[in-house]
Length: 230
Image (cartoon, rainbow, N blue to C red; front, side):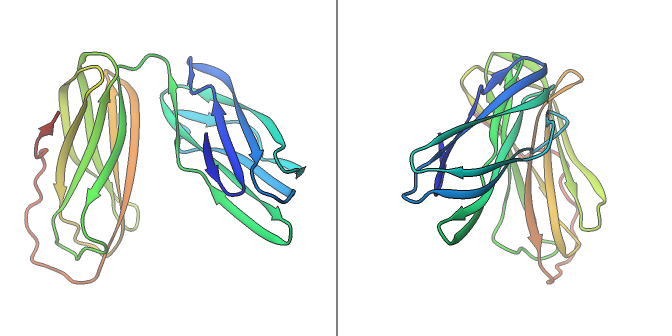
């Protein structure tokens, strides 16, 4: 279970088959005061994978140590993440928070894309090389996977960075794949990684990095991954 004061929360089940399914969000008031006027919502981090149907929910009150279960209908196509948002009142104090992403496994994918991360100091300068790493966790031994890196520039332009094909993973192991980019524009850049099994997308992860003003001489950006680590 996850905890964000004053609530402990849990989503179940965490593994479902493809199609229309039900997820249950369980909330527990772990604070000393009763909670009032709670707005609760389950969100998708990627509607392409797991889409949440319907609107938010309202709980008039939740007493100390009281639990509440809220069902949500979802359309599950591929493994993806959802997150919970809660806002309300604890005595006279208002609170509002969002949970981290919660992985919902859909079907029997051979691997999952754990994360993508732009390895850099805060606020890198224009023209500075950024190393982007994606971690793939093997669930069942398999080959023939494809991993794509993309970057969304300020203003919305979408650029492919690298495509790695015929990747092999072993069950229970993690592999790290990487590529580099030299952003030439100031502002927020979003790095995307997509994992495919054949034509089916089985994973998607993002990271954000803000590029500052200082410009350095433009250099050619490497298009191929720097390597693989088991």
